[in-house]
Length: 272
Image 1 (cartoon, rainbow, N blue to C red):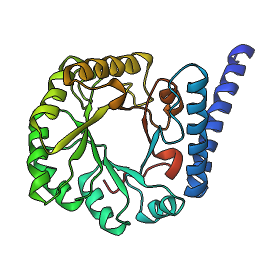
Image 2 (cartoon, helix red, strand yellow):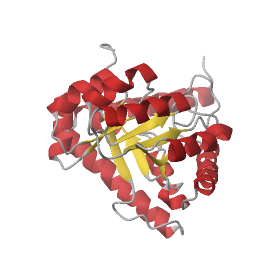
Image 3 (cartoon, rainbow, N blue to C red):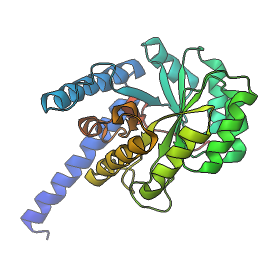
């Protein structure tokens, strides 16, 4: 027989798993509008908590919510749009260029997936009003983007973020922290059609969220980049925090969080 202590532990673990599953299920069936409102409420609370702890009072507009809509139908995005949301994030080039023409022109698209240089032209042409690419991780990609922007007749600069591999995992995208400054300087000084907007990281190797060392790494990189480029630290955004950890990320100074499943429900990758 199972000892009583072990049995209680098993029951507790099963209860916790059931609660997690129930939460995920409720997110999936609740309307996108309701989920979005809940996330925005948590963001406001985290911003207020940050201010109360002596951090910068970012205000309601200080933290951007990028609703990550990969694998989701346009209908789900429309529901969020009609609720007043404008910033959406996509991971796949083909999916973004298919969705962009079906959404209103004032949508602010963020590309947050790995981007190969040979897909740059397709992305820029397919979404000429792209707001930001958050995953620049090489000079080769920066050059390709800098060349593609004027080729489509775009007059304003394209905002880009340097993705930093703060976890040190080789399978993750992003530059190593020690290479961040040189890439940022290249973008700021050599790419006239790009605007260095900030830095981004995914965080822990298992995608469970950013750890303390991830936050520390990105802050250190921002300080070094700001000094090298000759701008204020606060002029560089920090994109860190996802569904599992966006509240903690805000407390740690994030100015942009990327939240998907908490808004749109669990993803279906069967078509990918």
